[in-house]
Amino acid sequence: MVSFSERLLDRLRHTESVVALTGAGISASSGVPTFRGKDGLWNKFRPEELANLHAFLKNPELVWEWYSWRRELIRNVKPNLGHYALVDIESYFSEFTLVTQNVDNLHQVAGNKRIIELHGNIMRNKCVDCNYQVASQELEAGIVAEEKKIPTCPQCGSLIRPDVVWFGEMLPEEAITRAQEAASAAEVFFSIGTSSTVEPAASLPYLAKGNGAYLVEINPDETPLSSVTNERFAAGADEVLPALAIEIEKMRSRYR
Ligand code: APR
Figure 1 (cartoon, rainbow, N blue to C red):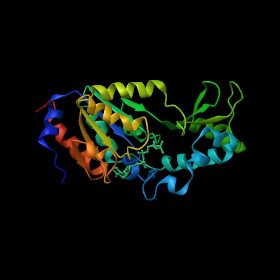
Figure 2: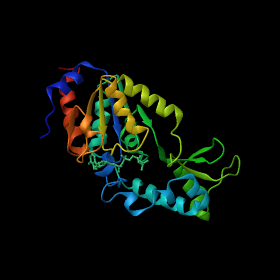
Figure 3: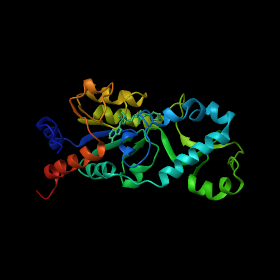
């Protein structure tokens, strides 16, 4: 049974401003591989061959094949109780922000509304040159499925790529700015299921704590962030978040 400190509960009782930063760990129990764990994707595949623009332009077929494999995997998984708990938690705080590094679309499927996608979304695609965007299912139903060739942009003819942030690329300016604003204003900041190693997302908890937030980590493994947190749950998000949602519901339900 997960227990929460009075300090955390007291903060949650009196604030509206809560931020949850999530990483691949929250989707682990849905069956989506993480990146750096023992079965992580980066232990099987080389990110420099698959998750950067140079690799894509050099071998678009290989990169498209890898993303199609990941999309197929993600199409066959569902949000877990950790994702659904964040949907309920969002409903109790008027200034709740979910900042995710995940591209697996599971927070969207679960039903969170105030989501900031720091690293894009694997179910979206975009042109490498112009602003054209297209959802995957439209694309796969059309171009790639029949001719098995790399889709090209109907506006300018350039290659279409997954709408995810690759290594060496800048994050969407608006997303990281909004995430930094939310982190600075947070009274409670949860870092959930992330190894806290990839910038600029990894700096958000420090920004929050530096502005007075109560910093909580939910991760079975220690991370570089662990030693600076106010409270740490060395357990899975799918276990801690439902218990947290129940505690918050007890405290903040309008019918009590
Ligand atoms: N609940 C919570 N945390 C978990 C769980 C779980 N059930 N299972 C694993 N974890 C933890 C792991 O211990 C690890 O610390 O989740 C973390 C996942 O870390 P990474 O695999 O590094 O994923 P993430 O932190 O999201 O990576 C950040 O790096 O490769 C890029 O763009 C990619 O968005 C990704 C970014």
